[in-house]
Length: 470
Ligand code: FAD
Ligand code: ZN
Image (cartoon, rainbow, N blue to C red; front, side, top):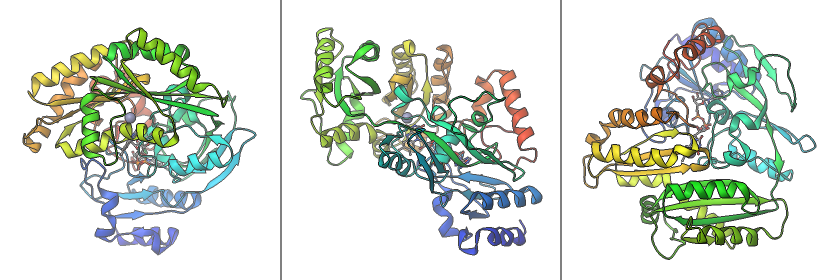
């Protein structure tokens, strides 16, 4: 790449906002799980939509490839450039303003680089709830959340990122700015372009700002950590809780005993809220708009569930600290696996009725493939979305275990397909699952995706090689 392109970029963003030093670039070039390490010509950090537009115009003129990056918490490598080193990382992190909070319309307009946690706080300061909630919320950005159509732990009640977005501002591959920052709950004026960019993982345009949907802050929340005999009972409990647990069911997360064991072993300050072990657990949260009576209603619901044998033991959080303690048991689940050696991951979804069958069959399949491996399926049972992670056998060689990643994926994904599920429920395709896509996508659908990509980004300069190989 000619030095003059970098000089021209520096002229757009200011020399302080272009990083070319190898050490300073390192944090942008590797990701959380260390599955991907890339190389880049530079990291460029625009401060405004106009600067993004100028940068993309320059890239289009010179055929320069750009990899958009937000908080770099993505789990499928879409934000990491390839090892060839031909790309430039376009980091949106400096674009972190809250442009407007409109409590009357229940909307908030924010820039793409704002962290999810700061977006939640801005809503709360206006007496509103922005419900998207992920364990990575301190680092991930609204732009990244929308580019990946993130899910998380409140999808059950509020939907995923797509359902929480009313409008977008996007810089297109030719540098033009599409201002679609609408605050409209109803707008049937043609194609829904916003939903094309949401979930496109930086391959169709650069999201620079968004209008987000806000909700009333719940007046009360009840959080329970429950022992359940197995996934069948958890499914029956889920359906009973949806029908009426004393309020709106907002969270229903499942984890096996081995998950709790890992957390208790590796996460400081954690303890088992229940007195004896159970094969499975559910973290359940119910919210209500009335400040009184929720705990009693949830306790009565759990009493019934215990009589029916759906729950064998229960702890209801009695304080905000206890609530945070219960949540920590769930939120630490991803991190603690790293202390148990290699772990092979799957982010899958199946229809709700098939979750128990999936868990039984997938566990049997991986145990047959690698005797002694430790299946740790956990996650968003309320959405039929299981993070089917498998830790290496104790004492096994990590590299040898991880060498079986693709074979294990294939076996698990085959079961997912038979159950009419998805091989990427919420993390996206990125680079990790790109080559799996043709095997699971309808040929017509894949063809339409390619048509859209080549129409919106004919030179292939936006996140090349992510999602689709063209
Ligand atoms: P990045 O990682 O920087 O980028 C992700 C993708 O979006 C890349 O393809 C990138 O090119 C593109 N992109 C980023 N910003 C833009 C932009 N402004 N315009 C266009 N494209 C852009 N995900 C879930 O869905 N649910 C979970 O529960 C969840 N839990 C997690 C827990 C942990 C501990 C971690 C580490 C991750 C978790 N994730 C989860 C994954 C991750 O946090 C989400 O995918 C998140 O939405 C990524 O946001 P980001 O800002 O970090 O994006
Ligand atoms: Zn998740």
